[in-house]
Image (tube, rainbow, N blue to C red; front, side, top):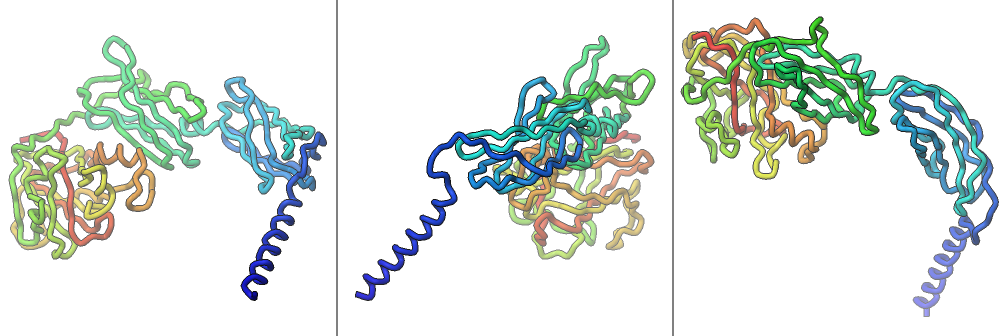
Length: 398
């Protein structure tokens, strides 16, 4: 009997709760338009507006919408639920004055009279980014550098022209990083035309961006890819064993992304890899490919190198168990484009894994033949190190 009474009481409270919720919903469609928004405030931002307001007291308000004509001349709208008192408009490609109408819509799809304002948005993000774009000569091509403080999702279209003046798109970079640089390479050291365009997801596109030279041309710095068949194994007193597990010292320069080097994990940091490049060279850049196959499982995680310091020497120093006699070349840090947590990789991250972690040396880098990579930290803090390939470019002097 007690159980029956309890069930009846529970049913009563459930029904009472449902009735209370039901009172907040319209019992029938009506044709009464809701009141207008009140206390509208707007702030011009890059490519649009931030809008805030007070929602009217009508109980059946469903959402607020702002309508406007976009850069293409099309009527567009942005909506915000009745539980929010602000909305944002984005996508304007210029600073022309815009007319914005803001409406309240109820659950019967009745629309209020508009509250209208006219204002000019700030310069579009693509044009702001354009002003920061710098195109300069780089090893084997041109370097493109830009700042995107708003972290606007953009695509950068990179072009070059042949000796007949015909332009060709060479590469497209998709990014939302706050500061980025990229390079297109594979060009001879002769005057060459380079250019870029910046586009956003609203199809706003900048004018063509050229280098700051009078003829809009750059002469790529000479470099060539080092022949890996000339590399030789060097093992010094404080070097780590890179042949552990399925790894092998020689896999680091066999031009096969599916093979790896791998340390045991019982050696303190830094863990060092030393190599004889087989020639005397002024290095221009190098690329480290992380271990990431299969299906990017290892990318930006496990024992992939994250922070490491590079050393070089023209003559092999005495094996003193340290860096005496070695020249410090560069401190490097692998950066994940998306900034996502370990185990989550965006399309931009995958593209980075395919291209590899690239580092450029300064022009005054000394001639060297022997190279050391001292790894101080890995992507997930693992005590072991794994990686796939290392590739060098430079100007061979002997």
